[in-house]
Length: 345
Figure 1: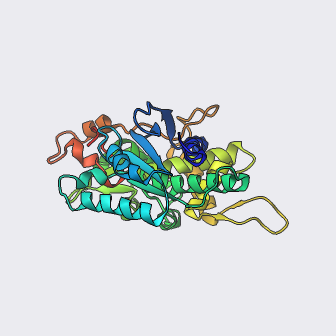
Figure 2 (figure 1 turned 30 degrees about the vertical axis):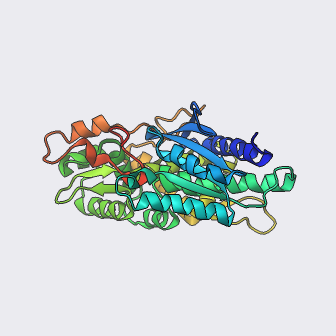
Figure 3 (figure 1 turned 90 degrees about the vertical axis):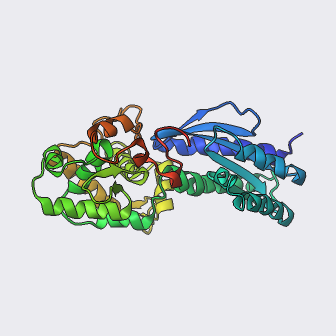
Protein backbone atom coordinates (compact mmCIF):
# COMPACT_ATOMS: atom_id res chain seq x y z
CA UNK A 1 0.00 0.00 0.00
CA UNK A 2 1.44 3.45 -0.90
CA UNK A 3 2.73 5.53 1.99
CA UNK A 4 1.12 8.81 3.06
CA UNK A 5 4.10 10.64 1.52
CA UNK A 6 3.64 8.83 -1.80
CA UNK A 7 -0.08 9.66 -1.94
CA UNK A 8 0.50 13.29 -0.95
CA UNK A 9 3.09 13.82 -3.70
CA UNK A 10 0.84 12.37 -6.40
CA UNK A 11 -2.04 14.57 -5.25
CA UNK A 12 0.19 17.64 -5.03
CA UNK A 13 1.53 17.11 -8.54
CA UNK A 14 -2.02 17.28 -9.88
CA UNK A 15 -3.00 20.22 -7.65
CA UNK A 16 0.08 22.23 -8.61
CA UNK A 17 -0.40 21.82 -12.35
CA UNK A 18 -4.07 22.75 -12.14
CA UNK A 19 -3.35 25.70 -9.89
CA UNK A 20 -0.71 27.10 -12.26
CA UNK A 21 -3.09 26.40 -15.16
CA UNK A 22 -5.01 29.39 -13.80
CA UNK A 23 -2.54 31.57 -15.69
CA UNK A 24 -4.41 30.47 -18.85
CA UNK A 25 -1.04 30.18 -20.61
CA UNK A 26 -1.44 26.40 -20.94
CA UNK A 27 -4.06 23.74 -20.34
CA UNK A 28 -4.19 20.50 -18.36
CA UNK A 29 -6.36 17.61 -19.53
CA UNK A 30 -6.72 14.45 -17.48
CA UNK A 31 -5.39 11.31 -19.11
CA UNK A 32 -5.59 7.62 -18.36
CA UNK A 33 -2.93 6.75 -15.81
CA UNK A 34 -2.42 3.21 -17.10
CA UNK A 35 0.63 1.93 -15.25
CA UNK A 36 1.71 5.32 -13.89
CA UNK A 37 1.06 7.12 -10.62
CA UNK A 38 -0.12 10.18 -12.57
CA UNK A 39 -0.88 11.14 -16.15
CA UNK A 40 -2.17 14.20 -17.98
CA UNK A 41 -1.85 16.09 -21.25
CA UNK A 42 -0.34 19.58 -21.25
CA UNK A 43 -1.83 21.73 -23.96
CA UNK A 44 0.05 24.62 -25.51
CA UNK A 45 0.97 24.96 -29.21
CA UNK A 46 0.70 21.16 -29.32
CA UNK A 47 -0.28 18.51 -26.81
CA UNK A 48 2.50 17.00 -24.73
CA UNK A 49 1.50 13.90 -22.75
CA UNK A 50 3.01 13.85 -19.25
CA UNK A 51 3.36 10.79 -17.02
CA UNK A 52 4.81 10.59 -13.54
CA UNK A 53 6.01 8.05 -11.03
CA UNK A 54 6.73 8.58 -7.33
CA UNK A 55 9.47 6.67 -5.52
CA UNK A 56 9.36 6.82 -1.76
CA UNK A 57 9.86 3.54 0.06
CA UNK A 58 10.96 0.82 -2.33
CA UNK A 59 14.43 1.31 -3.77
CA UNK A 60 14.06 -1.98 -5.58
CA UNK A 61 11.43 -0.37 -7.82
CA UNK A 62 13.80 2.16 -9.38
CA UNK A 63 14.73 0.06 -12.40
CA UNK A 64 11.11 -0.80 -13.16
CA UNK A 65 9.96 2.81 -12.65
CA UNK A 66 12.56 4.23 -15.02
CA UNK A 67 12.00 1.57 -17.68
CA UNK A 68 8.25 2.19 -17.50
CA UNK A 69 8.73 5.95 -17.87
CA UNK A 70 11.42 5.91 -20.53
CA UNK A 71 9.86 3.28 -22.77
CA UNK A 72 6.33 4.65 -22.82
CA UNK A 73 5.59 5.17 -26.55
CA UNK A 74 3.27 8.14 -26.04
CA UNK A 75 4.68 10.30 -23.24
CA UNK A 76 6.87 13.27 -24.11
CA UNK A 77 7.36 14.42 -20.51
CA UNK A 78 8.40 11.82 -17.95
CA UNK A 79 8.49 13.08 -14.37
CA UNK A 80 10.07 11.07 -11.56
CA UNK A 81 9.51 12.36 -8.02
CA UNK A 82 12.12 10.53 -5.99
CA UNK A 83 13.08 10.44 -2.33
CA UNK A 84 16.52 12.00 -2.29
CA UNK A 85 18.62 9.48 -0.40
CA UNK A 86 22.18 8.69 -1.44
CA UNK A 87 21.30 5.09 -2.31
CA UNK A 88 18.29 6.16 -4.39
CA UNK A 89 20.28 8.76 -6.32
CA UNK A 90 23.17 6.38 -6.92
CA UNK A 91 20.91 3.75 -8.44
CA UNK A 92 19.07 6.31 -10.59
CA UNK A 93 22.39 7.68 -11.87
CA UNK A 94 23.52 4.16 -12.74
CA UNK A 95 20.41 3.47 -14.77
CA UNK A 96 20.52 6.84 -16.54
CA UNK A 97 24.21 6.39 -17.35
CA UNK A 98 23.48 2.99 -18.92
CA UNK A 99 21.05 4.75 -21.27
CA UNK A 100 23.47 7.58 -22.06
CA UNK A 101 26.24 5.26 -23.21
CA UNK A 102 23.97 3.23 -25.49
CA UNK A 103 23.26 5.15 -28.73
CA UNK A 104 20.07 3.18 -29.31
CA UNK A 105 18.68 4.04 -25.85
CA UNK A 106 20.00 7.59 -25.38
CA UNK A 107 17.05 9.28 -27.19
CA UNK A 108 14.64 7.80 -24.65
CA UNK A 109 16.08 10.11 -21.97
CA UNK A 110 14.50 13.09 -23.75
CA UNK A 111 11.82 14.61 -21.56
CA UNK A 112 12.91 12.88 -18.34
CA UNK A 113 12.67 15.25 -15.36
CA UNK A 114 13.82 14.22 -11.87
CA UNK A 115 12.18 16.02 -8.96
CA UNK A 116 14.19 15.20 -5.81
CA UNK A 117 12.09 15.17 -2.64
CA UNK A 118 13.79 15.77 0.76
CA UNK A 119 14.40 12.47 2.46
CA UNK A 120 12.81 13.41 5.79
CA UNK A 121 9.49 14.73 4.44
CA UNK A 122 6.64 13.81 6.80
CA UNK A 123 3.19 13.95 5.17
CA UNK A 124 1.52 13.98 8.60
CA UNK A 125 3.10 17.34 9.47
CA UNK A 126 0.91 20.27 8.34
CA UNK A 127 3.78 22.76 8.05
CA UNK A 128 5.80 20.29 6.00
CA UNK A 129 2.79 19.75 3.74
CA UNK A 130 2.53 23.49 3.12
CA UNK A 131 6.24 23.76 2.35
CA UNK A 132 6.14 20.72 0.06
CA UNK A 133 3.18 22.15 -1.86
CA UNK A 134 5.20 25.30 -2.62
CA UNK A 135 8.31 23.26 -3.44
CA UNK A 136 6.55 20.95 -5.93
CA UNK A 137 4.82 23.91 -7.59
CA UNK A 138 8.13 25.77 -7.99
CA UNK A 139 9.89 22.71 -9.42
CA UNK A 140 7.09 22.23 -11.94
CA UNK A 141 7.27 25.88 -12.97
CA UNK A 142 11.05 25.81 -13.33
CA UNK A 143 11.58 22.35 -14.85
CA UNK A 144 8.38 21.61 -16.78
CA UNK A 145 6.80 24.93 -17.70
CA UNK A 146 9.81 27.21 -18.19
CA UNK A 147 12.13 24.28 -18.87
CA UNK A 148 10.08 22.87 -21.73
CA UNK A 149 6.59 24.22 -22.39
CA UNK A 150 7.59 27.92 -22.34
CA UNK A 151 10.79 27.54 -24.34
CA UNK A 152 13.08 28.52 -21.42
CA UNK A 153 12.16 32.17 -21.52
CA UNK A 154 14.31 33.90 -18.93
CA UNK A 155 14.87 37.30 -17.35
CA UNK A 156 17.69 38.26 -19.73
CA UNK A 157 15.66 37.51 -22.87
CA UNK A 158 12.65 39.33 -21.47
CA UNK A 159 14.92 42.32 -20.84
CA UNK A 160 16.33 42.19 -24.37
CA UNK A 161 12.81 42.42 -25.74
CA UNK A 162 11.49 45.23 -23.53
CA UNK A 163 14.71 47.28 -23.76
CA UNK A 164 14.70 47.32 -27.56
CA UNK A 165 14.13 50.83 -28.87
CA UNK A 166 12.24 51.73 -32.02
CA UNK A 167 8.77 52.88 -33.01
CA UNK A 168 6.36 52.13 -30.16
CA UNK A 169 4.42 48.94 -30.80
CA UNK A 170 6.42 47.85 -33.85
CA UNK A 171 8.28 44.95 -32.22
CA UNK A 172 5.02 43.46 -30.95
CA UNK A 173 3.35 43.90 -34.35
CA UNK A 174 6.31 42.09 -35.95
CA UNK A 175 6.34 39.30 -33.36
CA UNK A 176 2.56 38.87 -33.70
CA UNK A 177 2.71 38.61 -37.50
CA UNK A 178 5.64 36.16 -37.53
CA UNK A 179 4.05 34.06 -34.79
CA UNK A 180 0.85 33.85 -36.80
CA UNK A 181 1.94 33.71 -40.45
CA UNK A 182 5.74 33.78 -40.56
CA UNK A 183 7.79 36.07 -42.80
CA UNK A 184 8.52 34.90 -46.33
CA UNK A 185 8.72 38.15 -48.33
CA UNK A 186 9.77 41.52 -46.94
CA UNK A 187 7.57 43.64 -49.28
CA UNK A 188 4.52 41.53 -48.41
CA UNK A 189 5.44 41.55 -44.73
CA UNK A 190 5.64 45.36 -44.66
CA UNK A 191 2.16 45.53 -46.15
CA UNK A 192 0.79 43.17 -43.49
CA UNK A 193 2.13 45.21 -40.58
CA UNK A 194 1.40 48.56 -42.27
CA UNK A 195 4.92 49.90 -41.90
CA UNK A 196 7.17 50.79 -44.83
CA UNK A 197 10.57 51.71 -43.35
CA UNK A 198 13.11 48.90 -43.66
CA UNK A 199 15.60 49.91 -40.97
CA UNK A 200 13.45 49.62 -37.82
CA UNK A 201 11.93 46.36 -39.08
CA UNK A 202 15.32 44.78 -39.71
CA UNK A 203 16.63 45.95 -36.33
CA UNK A 204 13.61 44.50 -34.53
CA UNK A 205 13.90 41.18 -36.39
CA UNK A 206 17.62 40.98 -35.54
CA UNK A 207 16.73 41.45 -31.86
CA UNK A 208 13.94 38.86 -31.99
CA UNK A 209 16.23 36.36 -33.70
CA UNK A 210 19.10 36.92 -31.24
CA UNK A 211 16.78 36.38 -28.26
CA UNK A 212 15.21 33.27 -29.79
CA UNK A 213 11.73 34.76 -30.26
CA UNK A 214 11.82 34.02 -34.01
CA UNK A 215 14.05 31.76 -36.07
CA UNK A 216 15.55 32.98 -39.35
CA UNK A 217 16.33 30.35 -41.97
CA UNK A 218 19.94 30.50 -43.21
CA UNK A 219 20.67 32.53 -46.32
CA UNK A 220 17.14 33.93 -46.53
CA UNK A 221 14.76 36.53 -45.13
CA UNK A 222 12.37 33.80 -44.00
CA UNK A 223 11.51 33.95 -40.30
CA UNK A 224 9.51 31.33 -38.40
CA UNK A 225 7.80 31.40 -35.01
CA UNK A 226 9.36 29.71 -31.99
CA UNK A 227 8.02 28.26 -28.75
CA UNK A 228 9.69 31.08 -26.80
CA UNK A 229 8.37 33.85 -29.03
CA UNK A 230 4.81 32.56 -28.84
CA UNK A 231 5.04 32.48 -25.04
CA UNK A 232 6.36 36.05 -24.96
CA UNK A 233 3.37 37.17 -26.99
CA UNK A 234 0.88 35.25 -24.83
CA UNK A 235 2.44 36.50 -21.60
CA UNK A 236 2.03 40.04 -22.93
CA UNK A 237 -1.65 39.31 -23.53
CA UNK A 238 -2.01 38.01 -19.98
CA UNK A 239 -0.41 41.13 -18.50
CA UNK A 240 -2.50 43.42 -20.71
CA UNK A 241 -5.68 41.63 -19.66
CA UNK A 242 -4.92 41.89 -15.95
CA UNK A 243 -3.91 45.55 -16.15
CA UNK A 244 -7.18 46.48 -17.81
CA UNK A 245 -9.64 44.09 -16.15
CA UNK A 246 -8.33 43.09 -12.73
CA UNK A 247 -7.61 45.01 -9.54
CA UNK A 248 -4.08 43.61 -9.40
CA UNK A 249 -1.88 40.76 -10.50
CA UNK A 250 -3.31 37.31 -9.80
CA UNK A 251 -1.26 34.76 -7.79
CA UNK A 252 -0.58 32.75 -10.96
CA UNK A 253 0.78 35.81 -12.76
CA UNK A 254 2.89 36.77 -9.76
CA UNK A 255 4.44 33.29 -9.76
CA UNK A 256 5.39 33.66 -13.40
CA UNK A 257 6.77 37.18 -12.91
CA UNK A 258 8.73 36.01 -9.88
CA UNK A 259 10.21 33.12 -11.85
CA UNK A 260 11.32 35.60 -14.50
CA UNK A 261 12.56 38.08 -11.88
CA UNK A 262 10.55 40.89 -13.46
CA UNK A 263 8.52 42.51 -10.73
CA UNK A 264 9.47 45.07 -8.11
CA UNK A 265 8.93 44.44 -4.37
CA UNK A 266 6.13 46.29 -2.52
CA UNK A 267 6.70 49.87 -1.53
CA UNK A 268 7.17 50.53 2.23
CA UNK A 269 3.85 50.45 4.11
CA UNK A 270 2.17 48.87 1.09
CA UNK A 271 1.21 45.31 0.19
CA UNK A 272 0.81 46.10 -3.51
CA UNK A 273 3.35 44.50 -5.82
CA UNK A 274 4.48 46.94 -8.48
CA UNK A 275 5.08 45.95 -12.09
CA UNK A 276 8.68 46.44 -13.09
CA UNK A 277 9.73 49.20 -15.47
CA UNK A 278 10.08 46.46 -18.09
CA UNK A 279 6.48 45.33 -17.62
CA UNK A 280 5.22 48.91 -17.83
CA UNK A 281 7.22 49.43 -21.03
CA UNK A 282 5.83 46.22 -22.50
CA UNK A 283 2.26 47.31 -21.77
CA UNK A 284 2.91 50.72 -23.38
CA UNK A 285 4.12 48.96 -26.54
CA UNK A 286 0.99 46.78 -26.42
CA UNK A 287 -1.20 49.88 -26.45
CA UNK A 288 0.67 51.36 -29.42
CA UNK A 289 0.58 48.02 -31.21
CA UNK A 290 -3.19 48.43 -31.21
CA UNK A 291 -3.47 52.13 -31.96
CA UNK A 292 -0.61 52.47 -34.47
CA UNK A 293 -0.64 49.06 -36.17
CA UNK A 294 -4.25 47.96 -35.75
CA UNK A 295 -3.29 44.85 -33.79
CA UNK A 296 -5.30 44.47 -30.62
CA UNK A 297 -3.54 41.57 -28.91
CA UNK A 298 -6.72 40.72 -27.00
CA UNK A 299 -8.98 40.79 -30.06
CA UNK A 300 -9.30 37.00 -30.24
CA UNK A 301 -9.41 36.39 -26.47
CA UNK A 302 -12.73 35.53 -24.80
CA UNK A 303 -12.58 38.10 -22.02
CA UNK A 304 -15.24 36.25 -19.98
CA UNK A 305 -13.17 33.03 -19.92
CA UNK A 306 -9.73 34.03 -21.21
CA UNK A 307 -7.33 31.59 -22.80
CA UNK A 308 -4.10 33.22 -23.89
CA UNK A 309 -2.53 30.36 -25.82
CA UNK A 310 -3.53 29.02 -29.23
CA UNK A 311 -2.80 26.05 -31.44
CA UNK A 312 0.29 26.09 -33.63
CA UNK A 313 -1.00 26.52 -37.18
CA UNK A 314 1.62 24.42 -38.94
CA UNK A 315 -0.32 24.02 -42.19
CA UNK A 316 -1.03 27.73 -42.45
CA UNK A 317 2.68 28.48 -42.15
CA UNK A 318 3.60 25.74 -44.62
CA UNK A 319 1.13 27.12 -47.13
CA UNK A 320 2.62 30.61 -46.82
CA UNK A 321 6.08 29.18 -47.57
CA UNK A 322 4.87 26.95 -50.39
CA UNK A 323 7.37 26.52 -53.19
CA UNK A 324 10.43 27.70 -51.30
CA UNK A 325 13.38 25.29 -51.70
CA UNK A 326 14.23 23.18 -48.67
CA UNK A 327 11.02 23.95 -46.77
CA UNK A 328 9.52 20.87 -45.14
CA UNK A 329 7.44 20.23 -42.03
CA UNK A 330 10.66 19.62 -40.09
CA UNK A 331 11.60 23.33 -40.16
CA UNK A 332 9.20 23.91 -37.25
CA UNK A 333 10.64 21.22 -34.97
CA UNK A 334 12.30 22.36 -31.74
CA UNK A 335 13.59 19.12 -30.17
CA UNK A 336 15.02 20.93 -27.15
CA UNK A 337 11.46 21.77 -26.09
CA UNK A 338 9.90 18.49 -27.29
CA UNK A 339 8.09 20.47 -29.96
CA UNK A 340 7.26 18.38 -33.02
CA UNK A 341 4.11 19.87 -34.53
CA UNK A 342 4.07 17.37 -37.40
CA UNK A 343 3.77 14.51 -34.93
CA UNK A 344 5.48 12.98 -31.92
CA UNK A 345 9.04 11.84 -32.56
